[in-house]
Length: 39
Length: 276
Length: 226
Image (cartoon, rainbow over all chains, first blue to last red; front, side, top):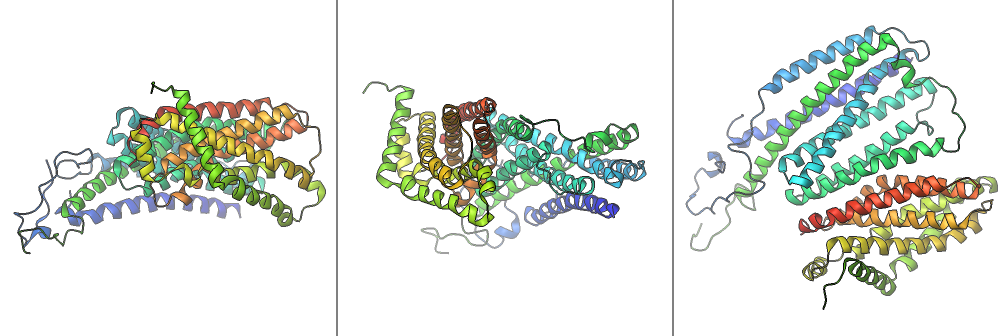
């Protein structure tokens, strides 16, 4: 039972970090179009 | 040197009567637009490796008697706390540096670090609450001074992020956010003591309960815990680097928007003597 | 006119703010009845019996003072329209003096509301015990000053923003948590014959810290405010 909560804790933590990284990547990628190519 | 406007925007338009490119300003972008530091990829790979190793260590850590499986949560909770305080510390230092030197770079570092710090503070609270639920059977313990302080810290710096979003002018935003960062940092020790005395002043000794400290002192725990802390610190550096790159890119983008004119890149405002 | 001293300028600002309040009446006429009503609503919400009410009296008093005090300290009249701000700036008023004056005026208004609300709380909640009134007044003044300083500081951060009315309380409440803890625990200690000195000292420390920060940063903040 408690293992489930532990796994949830890990999943939420690492998931949040991964989501943050993904958000940054998407924002950076979306600027490339207007800069005449990626740098 | 000002960046050139991409040709797709200026195609087919007579650019001879365009307004002159603004000269040096405090918020002018870096030459030719910012590029991601090549070392970021190496850092990312190293961080990923460290995280995998720490996860393996957490999985293989011995079973703890008093706390059971919940002790494994500490491998996320403790590194989160350390990273959160590290990040907020960098953010506060950046705020002070901005007030002393008015360096735009200090403002960017401060904002990025505090954003990451708020993320990890939130994770600390979350993992702490789950841990408390498993070990003490309560989601929230009003006698726990540490969690209370962390919760107030979370809202203090969340306010910083909200203020940051509310201001458009970069100079005003930098100054006001730096001031808020200083106010928040000055409040931290005061909050700490008020919350600490909240329960302990004039109070008898508290019950002996399974505590975070009990598990972390155990030898078999120190190694995977240390690994996790190192992994999270590397993660912080990585996140900060990428966030700073994003910030610089967005400054560059905002400058492009300014150059294109108040109504956007596709439309040129009318000019006397140029019937267009 | 001779060169006016710093304290004199602070005095001008305090008198100006209090005069505006006297003529506009936002605090006494509007916030105080609101706060009294809040004190009356709490027992209804909590379905409280006398024993519970006795214990939560001081806490409710300061909770209401904190929440409504924030609206006083962050009141719009303290952040005047741009034309008035420009005029004051051009007159050469020291921004630090303006900050301290605003804080002091807010603190005075807050303390006045405290004085009105305390007998109401005693009547409605009937807390038991013999409080040391001297310490309680000191606690109240230190707490009011802290809220006033905080309000003036946060107020200067949100000048000219569209989301000012909802943003300001969000920014001001987390730093005000120690004020709530110190005043409530201090009041309980004063009633229960325990020492409330540590709490008073904590509030004074907070007052000094906020005052120093505000005075030092008032100038730079003023320069970047448009």
